[in-house]
Length: 108
Image 1 (cartoon, rainbow, N blue to C red):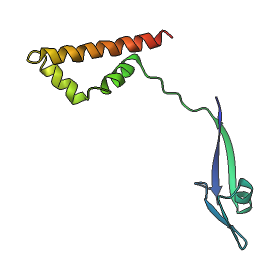
Image 2 (cartoon, rainbow, N blue to C red):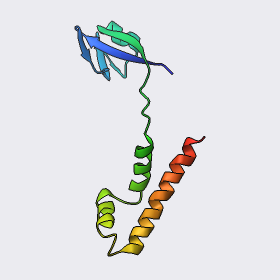
Image 3 (spheres, one colour):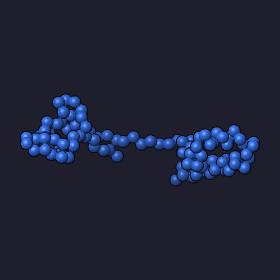
Image 4 (cartoon, rainbow, N blue to C red):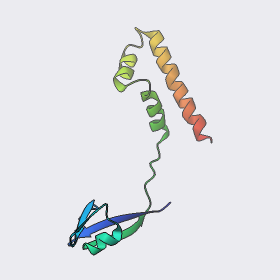
């Protein structure tokens, strides 16, 4: 899906779209493109297609895991898996749920 993007130039230099321009004795707030042109701005339009970011399987799983466990919490659970087997089991079960959820969504 293409989108139109406008760029504005004044004296050959690219500028942000001005919020106020003065033409003669009048000041225009949020000027129209016609008023900007009259005030000496050049307006160029270009079509572009926004980039679509596609997450990999691993990124999707990690995003879900981070909803419950921070990286430091996850590392602590991995370090203490022998001394806290119940907590590790809960963490591991959640990770497996996340993997299944992502696999289930990719089938759609």
